[in-house]
Image (cartoon, rainbow, N blue to C red; front, top):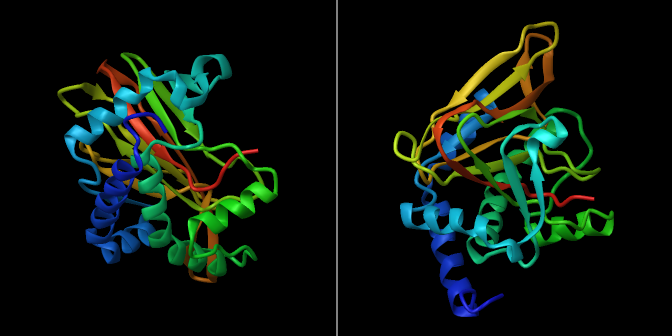
Length: 249
């Protein structure tokens, strides 16, 4: 922690994030996840909290690594992975969202015939990741400028993968940037890919499948693969907070 991240500040942030997460319509979110593989959680952060989170990008001491997408063929733009300890708001959101997503994740695993199940507490799941050598934190900040984009991808990072993740849009569409839509594709067996665009406003989060999800077909449940990315930013600058619940090797 630094002077801004005192225990009192961290506790207040954690309580505020928990209240907002608990107030969301989780029945509707679960229905959208089952139907589409993604759901919007409106108003997870206030505009002031979004600006504060985006400002962290200019504080290199907060991060363990920086990735320039063009160097790796990932697109254009860049992102930074946070170091531990995470900033209070990032840690609080990760901890508050995980317990709400665990029942969905375990139900999906069972439907797809997968053996792994996830514990109720995020700390217990992280302990599992760390024991397997996945010890590097995965929450990240992404920064896009004019002409930047993110290719379709999956955030896997190791053997232990939590099947859902979240992103929070920190910038205001139409004011801070234009373009830069959050996009997904879903590939069903023997069918063409299905596109999905999630209309996010500043402070909204998208929760979505990391890798695959179950779909009920005429002959039972089958898996479909999903990828996500960001379309080209036509103007301005776009910041996003990414919340991945498994850590990396």
